[in-house]
Image (cartoon, rainbow, N blue to C red; front, side):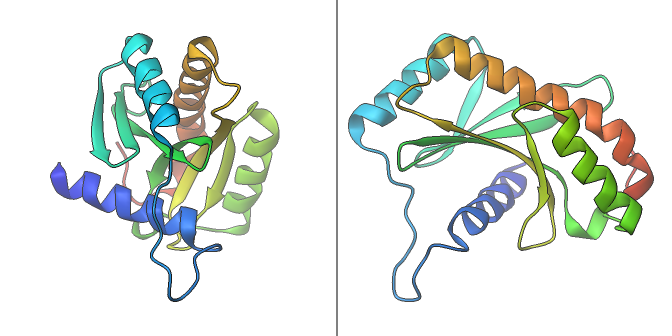
Length: 165
């Protein structure tokens, strides 16, 4: 389980900083103390059981109707809250033109949620929120939205996955 969180955190950090990190700079998840306190306060009040995975990175375990168990990663970075779920790693995908068309359709079908393939070839969902304007109700709504989208989309993605749950 620790290996999974470490790998998930590494994939997440790579995804976030792939386009913006300079060769000599080491990426950091930056949040000021007030923003960190606000995010932690909302997580505490949300009613979800969460775990800290790294500085400014937390996870919440969800159980779906189609996908038995998956993690939503909550990342605080430069005034943003990023909700992220890796649905499948590259090695577990059977990509085809139909698969990519399905992902594009999901981006239209699901409100707020983006589906994509990261630099490592992993399939993910993501929601970006501005920490400045997010309150507890909005955070919970988006956590519910991403978890429902992952579970619902999983049904349509099964034909394109090597592993079947």
